[in-house]
Amino acid sequence: MKYKIKFSVWLLIGGLIIYSSCATIFRGTQQSVNFSSDPPGAEVFVMGQSTGRVTPCDVKVKRKVHKNIYKNNQQYEQIYELKKDGYHDFLTKDYGNFNYGSFYLWVWDIGTYGIGTVIDIVNGAFRVYSGRIYGQLVSKGGNPDNYTVKSNNEKSNLNEKPNYSAQNSPAEIFDVDKNIPVAPKKNPYRFALVIGNEDYSSFQKDLNSEMNVAFAVNDASVFKEYCVKTLGIPEENVTLLLNAKAMEMNRAIKKINLLAKNSAGKAEIIFYYAGHGFPDEVSKEPYLMPVDVSGAELDFAIKLNELYRQLTEYPAQKITVFLDACFSGGARNQGLLAARGVKIKPKEDPLNNGKMIVFAASSGDQSSLPYKEKKHGIFTYFLLKKFMDTKGQMTYKELSDYLAEQVGLKSVMINNKEQNPQTNVSSEAKDVWTIWSFK
Figure 1 (cartoon, rainbow, N blue to C red):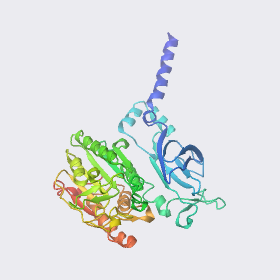
Figure 2: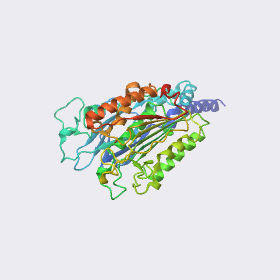
Figure 3: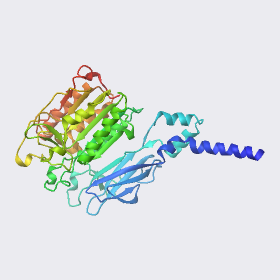
Figure 4: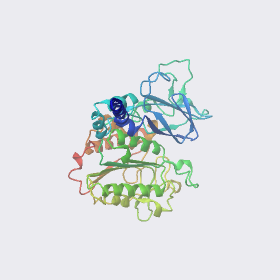
């Protein structure tokens, strides 16, 4: 009898140790990271070790990283490298931020007298890294002076051969793409659909690479990180589409429509799009363009008014739309109508339904332009910059004023062209939108 009691006690203790570490169970001691590159086919290295995978791919990385394992890394700092014959090595670092997690994880851990919390911290289960790494590889035949030189040793061992990063300036490495502010809590009723359509030429053989939308993939990927980290949107509440086809875009829009329907009016929806817009030449109706749809096939494109209808079909707390696209036929590089020298001023209908606000990158027949030095669209760069500087603690009016001033000025300074963002507000939100915030 005595031995049975002892066995039961040890069994209970073992069960507490195993099952009390809630973050370890639900998040695991590893995290999946998506790696992609342009061009693809680069071998992925994590902390100096080959993963045996080539881009694009998903790789599991350890959440717990000890100090000084590779290139004088800091604790919880991953070092990733992408290597491809004929190209300079791409190197980037990623620090695992402490994620306070869902409330129930902490309640579970505390309910086990703190045993779970200790185990989770020791295992690194509360650390969260970027979900996606993108590298723009630089040909060895190119001019390395145009790119950032990063020493293999951050303590400047000048005897070692440097790596050339795909970033164009040191500010990019530590600017809006890095050190993203982390919100202290999550909002379970906040949902986001984020789309970056950059590569049209791979899906439409009659287009050349000049028709692509430079940096749209990076725009969407980094905006998604801000959604999760700064805006407090749970990872599972964010849908990210890169180089999305028509079916994928329609499916994702329908999904967010159903999420609003089933949230009993408590949903906050964020929609972000970077890519080509396109105007119907007859009706002037604006469309969002999937990568597999041409200007001659607008029946398969996403009509902007239909998107707005689906976003506002069911009651929601607020709907926020960011459009880094233009609808005149122009674009960051060369628009879909540029080959014919055509530019159309798109039709602008009032927003009549729902509590919706639309932050658009440009006005009228203007183009939405790039900020090449920062590897972003100029509108998206300053959008992210404001999120970073304020840690998301700002009103919609403050964001609107900031974008109008910064994009308007910098576009002339950088691109020698006017680009004036506009803020469109629905009739239901016109009296309250100025005090809305991203908290």
